[in-house]
Image (cartoon, rainbow, N blue to C red; front, side):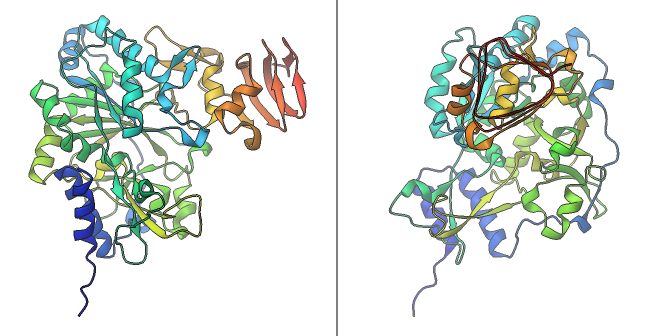
Amino acid sequence: MRNTPDPLRAAEAKLRAAGAGDAAVNTFLQQLARVQAGERGALPEAELEPVDALPEADALPEPGREEAATLLKEAVVIKLNGGLGTSMGLDGPKSLLPVKGELSFLDVIARQVLHLRERTGARLPLVLMNSFATREPSLAALEAHPALTQDVPRDFLQNKVPKLRADDLMPVDWPANPAMEWAPPGHGDLYPALVASGMLRQLRDAGYRYAFVSNADNLGATMSWRLLGWFAQTGAPFAMEVAARTAADRKGGHLARRRDGSGSLVLRELAQTPEADVPAFQDIARHRYFNTNNLWIDLQALDATLSAAGGVLELPLILNAKTVDPKDEESTPVLQLETAMGAAIDALPGAVAIRVPRNRFGPVKATTDLLNVRSDAYVLGPDSRLALDERRHGVPPVLDLDSKRYKLVGALEERFPQGPPSLVDCRSLTVTGDVRFGAGVVVRGDVVLEGPLEVPDGAVLGDA
């Protein structure tokens, strides 16, 4: 009698052979067992209720300088830095892309941390969660900031997990390109990666208790001693910064409460929403808050929780159905198991959320975002935080660039060879076809351009 393949045993063997640590292995095997038991990661609307009100960051008192300095001595900044920006045509770390003049995302982040150190005297280390692809160039780039010394390592590595055959959940084999047998596990991997890398233990041994975590491409997400003071006072193990949803945020993960009597907060992503519930998911009047992915973590509480559970934090699953070669629809169908780091709000009892102003959320996910932040609509403040110019009154320009011609960074820069136009007085800019901009172009009000077109140097488009 033939032995039935065992997905759990096969997955463990594959992970061990790749050098995965215990926390990463245990986390993936627990997730796979949940899928085998029939879990599909769905969060139906019937199990949730809206969040009506939250504390407001703008209403928080400013902590005293002595109190702030004391808390900052126990604080660390963690930036997720595993992305290559492939959707924008990049083949290196997205964080090394110039974002303001010659300064990259990583340069700006380093300046933010150094500014706070100089102002407060805090140790405040900067720690990157890198991927294998981003580690070497990112650490090399930090050498340009020699003042950024610290008493813990500068980075730790995110894990990789096997793609699973959709038919039998066995790890997929793809001899044509073995690298395609692996997938990133989503940023929920933060927690097992902290344990498996030894970084959590190193931070705790060095006396760090509070971590502020955010994405490297969100330069509005800076360490705030007002929010740090609030978080420390709550005694919560975890806090999520959320902002008011707009029509532009309808597809992003939103905050809700479980309707099971616990009242616990939960993060729901679109991929976890049954098709019939998508209209409710996208109803911004019902579900009013979206996750900025700016998180606060009590490392002492996290350490205790993970130590008691073998390094496993049971997060809601996100199952992505793909093909092993994403560019070949005829290749083997697979499932990729992912989690979101914000989903820890449902896994750590007592977790809380706070509403923050929109200026703490400004990620660069597409070339339209990049053009916006490179323009004069955004400014770098004395603390190196990237924010909208005050004349924008909190509303960014709405850019709609022809995706066939502007989707990739190289194509964008080819059409703006002298840099971005002035957008500080622009409400919207819509471009279709091939339009190339000269130097010193000013865009005001609402402007629609159709190519082929050459916009001359110094042109003033639209009106205020």
